Structures are given as C-alpha cells and as structure tokens.
Length: 309
Ligand code: COA
Ligand code: ZN
Image: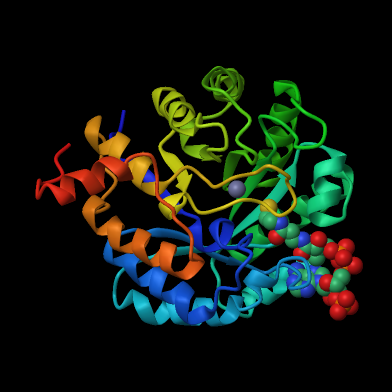
C-alpha cells in the first residue's frame, strides 16, 4: 500500500471562517505564500457562501486571484466550498476546477448551516454533483457531523453509509468523512470505514477531523491503518465552525505531518517551513496557536538542535 499521503490544507477556509477578528485578503495571501513555500499542494482556499452568513469569506474572488499569482509554476490544486447553485455559478466565474460541497447527517445541522432540511440538502448536493460532472469539475462531498451532530448527537453508521451511497451513485469524485465538532473516536472511525470499505475502495475517501477533544491524531492513525491516504488539516490548528457550537480547530497540519513523517509516510511537505506559516497564522489572528508538537519544536530551537524525525 502506498506510503504517500495527500494533505489538503483547509486553514484558509475552515480555519479563518470563524475568526472573530476580520482577516483581510493581503493577510490571507501572506499565509498562503508560506503554505506554498512549505510545498503544500492541495489548498481549500475559500467558500462561495452568503457573505451575510460568513463575512470572513466575502473576498473569495480576490483570494483566488491572489493565489493564482502566488503559484508561479507550482501546481497547486485549489478547492472552494459551495453550498448551493448560486455559489457554484459564482465559483465557475472564477475558473475553479474543484469544489467541496457539504451534506450534514441531520435536519438540525443542515438547517443551522445551510437553512435547508436534510432532504433539501441531499437534493441540492445531487444537483451540484450532476452539474459538476457535466462541466468536468471535480467534486468532493463532505459528510458533515459523520461522528456526531452538534445538535442531535451520535448518528448511526448506516445513515453515514446511506448518504455516501447516494452521493457516490450520483457521481461525486470523493467523499470526506467529517467529524465537524471533534466528537468522534478511533473506534468510531474504524466502524464507519469497515462499513464503507466493504463497498468502496480507499481512494474514494478523505477524512476531515477537528481536534476539540484531542482525538484527531488517533483518528487519523486509524483511518491511515485502514488505507485512507487523503487527509484535511489546518495550519496551526486554526478553525471552528460558526454553525456547530463547540467546534474547535481542525487537526493541526504540523501534528499530522510530523506523525506521518516519523512513521515512514511521505507528504512532500517541508515540515520545518510550516513554522513560518504558523507564525503568520498567529500574527493575523492575534492568537497563540500551534499543534501539540510545537512546544517541543520551540524547545529544540531554543537549544539550537535540529528537528529530526
Ligand atoms: N453566495 C452568495 N450569496 C448567496 C448565496 C451564495 N452561495 N446563496 C444565497 N445567497 C444570498 C441570496 O442572494 C440572498 O441575498 P439577499 O439577502 O441580498 O437577497 C441571501 O443570500 C439569502 O438567500 P437565500 O437563498 O434565502 O439563502 P438563505 O438565507 O436560506 O441561506 C445559504 C442559505 C446556504 C446561502 C447560507 O446559509 C450560507 O451561505 N451558509 C454557509 C454556511 C457555511 O459556510 N458553513 C461552513 C461550511 S461547513
Ligand atoms: Zn471542518
């Protein structure tokens, strides 16, 4: 089985959407520049949602234009989140070729997030997938609240499986199993993937874990053990969801990359260059951030020691 792991950096979207302090385009692009310097190849850049619902993403077009300039020959795969056809059309006007769509497991979560019931959201997702397929646009469907709904608690694996079946049958290129509030456990990930992998191959899946209760690394390890090779993470552990109370940041990119590299996996990412991105993330949010690995990194740096895996 491949030892290469694809890291999709979601700090610019999931990480920044919930910041209380307004982050401007220039600041976002400074962060993006450091991420690209560290050789990150997959970036969820922004979302095309209502600026009233998520003001931090109102500069979506400017961020995409800026990112295009920053790439300078490097092949970066940029994804944007779209909640509906209006968002899709807006994204298309910005030459996007990969989208993320969101389907939460319950009525309550879909209503809070998108102002639609579960059934309405399923219908919108089916339409988005069909349109994306027609246009040759790659689409990843997030099954949000896969481990637990922030309002209605734990949901059965059979529901997660049924939503995946429907979206795969409709034509989604990928599914992301998303633990939006960080309420899951490694055992739950095993249970979900044992069901899914009976029917589908591992390359259809990505995982998206938040680290609210400190379980995300262990959950990633479980997904990795089961053959999953695509992971979302957020630099410095930035993040949270404005529509899911209690949702903290995503698993920190630096924690995930360290775990992978120290366990013999490759990501293509330059671990030590992530520190510059963490510094920018802290500066623009004016918050002390960083994954679990960072206190050790800072001690190594103070003592003048190299970072070795
Ligand atoms: N982009 C920009 N504006 C949009 C939009 C989109 N994708 N979809 C709708 N709008 C605008 C409408 O034009 C309308 O504007 P107006 O008030 O100036 O007339 C307004 O938003 C309300 O439109 P409506 O269709 O009634 O939407 P809604 O109020 O039911 O909200 C969503 C639905 C999906 C637009 C909104 O809930 C949303 O953007 N959610 C995003 C959630 C998110 O990003 N979550 C984090 C990711 S998991
Ligand atoms: Zn998230």
